[in-house]
Image (cartoon, rainbow, N blue to C red; front, side, top):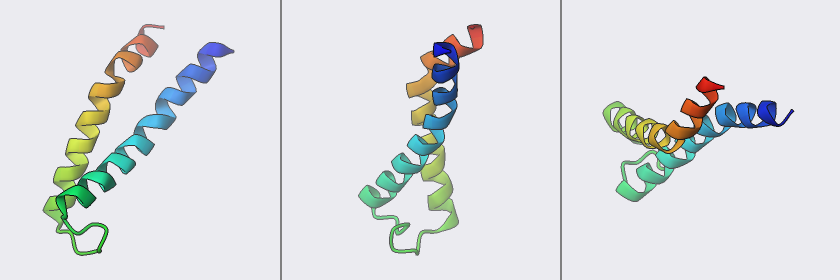
Length: 68
């Protein structure tokens, strides 16, 4: 039971973390996402940064889940 809860939470948290982190980075850099005028390149760059940051943060957890 505990493994299912942990395994499920691993795959729920990263998408939310990516979304929140990317919005925060757009806001801090002033790229305009929050104003609705960010360019496609800015959005893609910030999303790639956010995905990389979340992947690094959850790397150990994902590796443990894959071994289980």
